[in-house]
Length: 351
Image 1: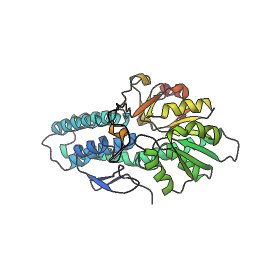
Image 2: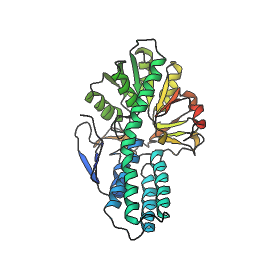
Image 3: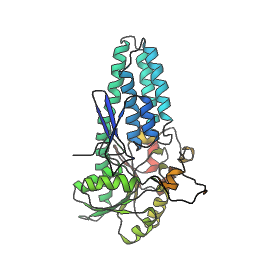
Image 4: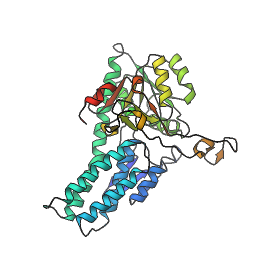
């Protein structure tokens, strides 16, 4: 059975607590927007697509349980709560773009004299629910386009070795995954020899989550610590690097989990193709380049502790940015549900 990080049925939303993986699989009930904000902010759910889906579904659950006297009152709650959800993890753009679209929809429905408040609420919830279905379809398309592009650069009948960073699979999306979706597609074609996944300090999403998914799917994989990437590229015949994205600027600059930038530099040095796999919902058409992307900084305890055990010297100061920005000049292609684009071509694509 495929892993499910998000379960939604009959207006009931539960999410898999990813802080407990791989040791324990426990689902948390999300009953309202405040619950949604908390599970996103605490990283009990993470991954840009999953953040947007869980945030929006938490709003759907909340408004379903309430009665509204007018469409204007419903619209005001929608706008207020979506803006609040954006603040939970500001670097990932998917939540912001989804919020903007949903606020526009709410305003449009408010001024539509042909429907009442009950129909408005129902239509709004239906649009949010469709996000789950659309995300899985988009991920499978990303997987197929990415696999084709990687294989096109290899000699015929070659088995490939892929390096990936952080977690971009079923646990970061509605299902299947972005970068891990590409890996799954290669594996389904019997073209994948091995995956090398980084541990992804300081939160260990690679060691805890990506490794968990790879073992679950019986995909041949090897875990490496973050500082082994250069040696792996030199000694393990890596065919390509595939990572996800939390935000892609219009020129192709990409914000992703901290450590991505240095992996891209190493790939350039070793002449290894470096791909970013992301749906169009991760592309911020209002962001001309990566210089304007706000980088979230996380608590220092994520660096200084593992669980309840302190690993760093008492009194040391810490800098803990959750993301870095990889310049488009280091990126071979942006893999989307519409195809693979050179970073310089994104500005020409209709969003």
